[in-house]
Length: 551
Picture 1: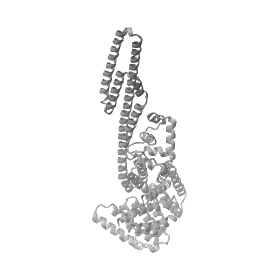
Picture 2 (picture 1 turned 180 degrees about the vertical axis):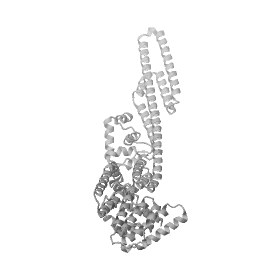
Picture 3 (picture 1 turned 30 degrees about the horizontal axis):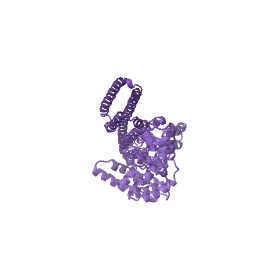
Picture 4 (picture 1 turned 90 degrees about the horizontal axis):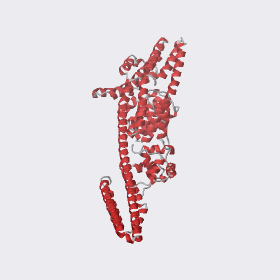
């Protein structure tokens, strides 16, 4: 039963369209809504122009019937736009209908006034208006039906918001009583009011498929993009929510919000409902934009009820959005520290390698000169011996400095000490044995640099995957199945993924990426283009989607 009351509460809100056997691109629908929000001033200006035209015509009219029609038109324009103005003009319609001696229109306008008061949260005022109407004396079938429908709507609202259990039950009982008194026989077969009641009744009994059948019939009778389309569509959102089809539900609530924006509707029920869903999905930035827009519209519509509904959602989304920004800042701080440490480690390795290379080159030159002098100057044996002693002293000093440097460096990169110690022993042995060819051979290649780069990349990969454990799966989800990347081993990235891992860390410039990965800039550009060509969606937004992974 409570679901029925919720429907009654939301009966004038926005709704959605039919999708059959189609793939729904929600992101595209969100972009349409974003574009409509950007053009809000134009839609508001169009409504204001219509209002001003009616007011100008009203100022030039002195005929009661013409004034009644113009005031009624102004009420219709203000009804979803400014609640207090709508109440003002429907109240003037009541006075004009009374002046014309037309009791049917008097009752009709009083019922519209009561309904507007209910939608604005003015329940006491609505009750006073309804009490001023002799329900038993209503002759017109449409007014009689609207009378009981308005009473049912009032007590459904009161029951929904009541916090006292005994009173809540009393309100719901009255809601059921007045709802049962509505003469459904007075509806025509295709009357939207009759179809809406049947849809609500199906929803209340849990028959979502039946509700959708009536929704399909209603949808055929409204123009897409109109305010009536938005109202019909919101029920489709609720029907699909009951079916558990979240994609269809989000599509339709987006269509409802889009129609509301394009019609300059300030009673933005669909928008704050969509913001709620986006917050649950974790899309805090968009949820914050939408709920803030709904709050601005609610301020213009000027009702306590809508403000009270939006306020807790706005607070929750604002808190979550702020928390997500703090998390992002913390992650950036961690990445900055890790990047600085990696850079420092890389520079230290380069400096040490270069220093060792120069020392070995000097030692090789000195040994060569000593051997040449020994061969040529046998008579100066004593001097050569002295020079050899000096050379040995220099070598010992070099070894002592090297040992002391290794002892300091071990505090920064302890995992390198065994490798360096092994290198020292091999060089010392070759120097003593004068095996210069072998000594040259082990120093001329790039194996040490390549190994260091490999370890640097391994350290980068493990650190990155520790920060973003689901990056590979999320990255592949952005690619077409045939373009997805399978890594050769767990815990390691290949060049393709490593490029986009750097982009995820905020390093977008191809020259900086090429510098880190030791490729040319053109090669990096080709890698990026190849991956983007395999994007599942828009390739222009692919890198933006990569940068949002893990947020």
